[in-house]
Image (cartoon, rainbow, N blue to C red; front, side, top):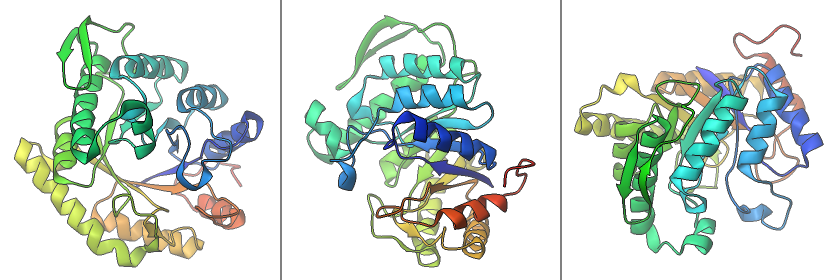
Length: 295
């Protein structure tokens, strides 16, 4: 099991930098941030851009893997996003992960995408085109939402054949997309759920999703053992940061289900993702392979 942490882009950089550095010191394998113009209950609070944040985090750290969890297709074009990812991969010396979701409703203010059907089509086009561009292919593409002509991006990614690609999906079409293109499938449990249940109660939902992901792999002719499975907790999967014992129980439960990566949120003092910082530090101290002197 690998462990990650999401750091919301809500703090001015001097404070944010300390959190990214601390995440690395504590031994997390990967660190993430959100990709929105503003976000739900914090839409009237400070909120910073994902690409500049990741670039700064890449300079402030040296080991930990970095990414958006997840990138929002409604806010960008695959060509410009792929170019930004290649640049981030260079700055970070090959530590960037490209994680993509279908896109939040806030992005529709810019794109005018009508409903879930249009969002799903946009998602599929975004993933396919981003994958091809990151591989350094010369691409001509004419989709419903994205177009490019005779485009090749150089230099190539530091990581080969491309930056690792993670796809968030909860429904059949999205899971087939993940099975076709992704190195990692991402779920947060109940789709768009923000009423966290104690994690033992979420096991049936997660098991059904894992089974559905296996079926999606079978449908596209892929060995399901070749795709990693990342669980983002805190939104619908709760109780993971209640104590060290709770975290260890959750990690064992999720590993037993077949998840390869477990991600928590950096504790906040109030809703959402409220948790105790001292407990979080104790949990980080219990992570396997933790660096010396990370207390």
